[in-house]
Length: 224
Image: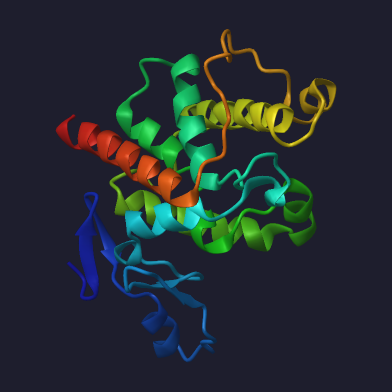
């Protein structure tokens, strides 16, 4: 195995990519963030070994969806949204493999360090945000034993669940009419959405719920 690499999720992964930029003589401004776990994550060249699920859960629990413009005593967090998307997959494909359910839970995981931008802002920022998101997504997937890039059919199912989630959030807590939500997110085709009640919770409660669900799904993936 080449020096400076470790095995994670069955793949050889770089321990620290920033040193590569230094060796090449490239300018290195501070592009990393210190995590509560003590890890130092390089946002431009993320290494899977620097990613911890506790950091992801904590960050996502404190990142607000809809720029915080939601009803309730607490912001509706990306962690809460991620739990909803994973749960909605049961309507779309009840027999979906647990590793793809884990991918759904982590579908917005990069936002624990780059935040959640609403779609109009993403469009204005352009491809730079998308490129950073994709690099972080690949590193997160490798860290937890998933393929860096998901199969197209899986991505499509997760995207569908994401759209249904956005429709529910928009109509229940973000002030959209059903007509507006239908226009922007598509009218949901899922048979039964009545069991999904959106009630924003305190960040630490959502963090605990996210970690608990992650433990269940990762355990299922490990045991096959």
